[in-house]
Length: 247
Ligand code: BTN
Image (cartoon, rainbow, N blue to C red; front, top):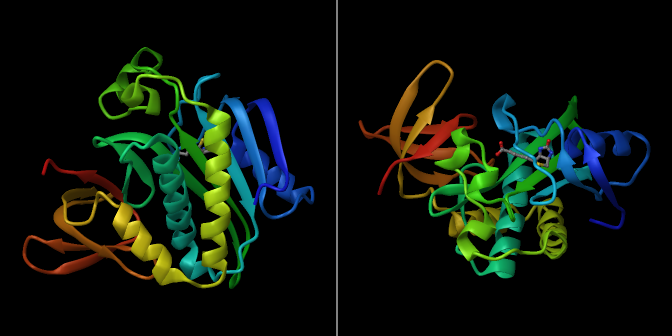
């Protein structure tokens, strides 16, 4: 990972750029970093606020050999790598919210958007997009995210280097991705559980057609969230928007 690192001032989205480069023949493991994005993409069709000069916008283009049913694990692997790197680099107790949000004091500081091209039983291409709010301040944030978002600088009250953070993330990513490719799923899931702020919490899960309240119990080997509903039954969640309720 990171043998090729391509840096841009401005792109629409580093995810789209990474996908283009992969198609042009760049190797698996190519990293794309941009100073700003004009069409930063979030999960569930949302926009990722991407002002210049402040945050980390990075994508890693990959050709994983894992079967598509473990695709969610690629995202979990990525968030484990990023959270480990963030903790090491900042000493902040960053935690993971299922599946792939990075939180400080229950506010979001980072997210991951994985985009896949699946053909038959194979993942043809994957792009893991990582967005970390590094030096963004509350003044830089639009009203609608102030309540729910934070940054490393807001917590630490000093500027941090995006470059050094990127290096830490690439190093960790390399290590965890190799474990994934070697099918060390349990190691990844155990680490995810350790870093998770979701397990054991009351959660609200919003689907397109319904909403449930439950306790997050664990994740299974495909990375699905196992929750216990208030009537004692269990459900496995593979997509949905999870809100942590106050402890
Ligand atoms: C989320 O919704 O939590 C995922 C956000 C992912 C944002 C990153 S920024 C770099 C990469 N390029 C994009 O357009 N999105 C991802």
